[in-house]
Length: 359
Ligand SMILES: *Cc1c(COP(=O)(O)O)cnc(C)c1O
Image 1 (cartoon, rainbow, N blue to C red):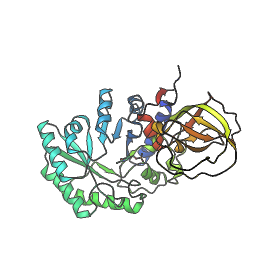
Image 2 (cartoon, rainbow, N blue to C red; image 1 turned 120 degrees about the horizontal axis):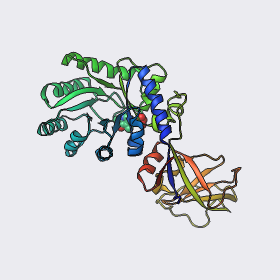
Image 3 (cartoon, helix red, strand yellow; image 1 turned 120 degrees about the vertical axis):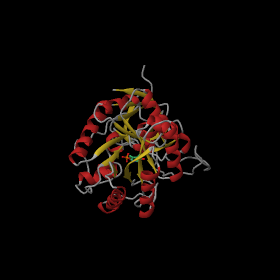
Image 4 (tube, rainbow, N blue to C red; image 1 turned 60 degrees about the vertical axis):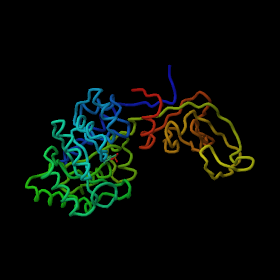
């Protein structure tokens, strides 16, 4: 029996994308960590990636524990600065975690000691996006020296930064140069090389494609560029030849089609979410209702229709209303519509009760 809405998952496509990005990274002396948080690290898909690149990053310890329980034994990094309260789980399940705070680091060192384990840490610093980590050079170097000299159960494995997150800042040779210089300064202070100089995610991969990545950067954490593969071309101006966009397809069923006015009739109040949307009077037009809502994908407008002439009108937690007046194909109740995904729709449809099927 088919159930809708459903997320159709193509493991072969993600294997293809992993191979492609891995080759690009290898050719440029970069280690690749595949970020799986965008699809909640669904174990089946992670297993597929594992055959090619068994090095992963996730932001949540709960999903990482699920990966371990499912038998994923590759290298896993926790890329959200951890809470003190999760130290034990992080040390037991992750090979490495990202850090920014002295007190948290001290706590991690104590817990690692108690568990008789050594734990790798990657120090995150800020070069302008104003997300996590120390911003000033002296602070970065001081924290690195603290890990190296005072915390015997932690190993300073590297230095990293993040872009295009809070501050919408694009990675450039200049700000990645700041990261490289800081890494060099730390290496001089501690008298050894750092293993990972981690220059960001998919947005930084674009610099690799363009041949502008500073040489010292040897590690990237790539999520969207492998899971969805749209942003390199659409946002970062560095399309990756051969990347597939069909790892995830969302299928939803039409429950009604009807010609109706486009401008609501009566006194205006608020919609299902307490908002006051604007409406445009375009006369009578044919529209369809799809059994898929915000509860499934958070923002149905970000779905990519595979049929031409579909326009999103709105909806509620459970339904989406689309304009199909300009559709060449006839659409009727019972039809299944297919949509491509962007990052937010992948993020939500992977955790909500949208039915999951593997192709
Ligand atoms: C989510 C995340 C990434 C991956 O970003 P993409 O744009 O999906 O490649 C990389 N690094 C950190 C710290 C993240 O939180």
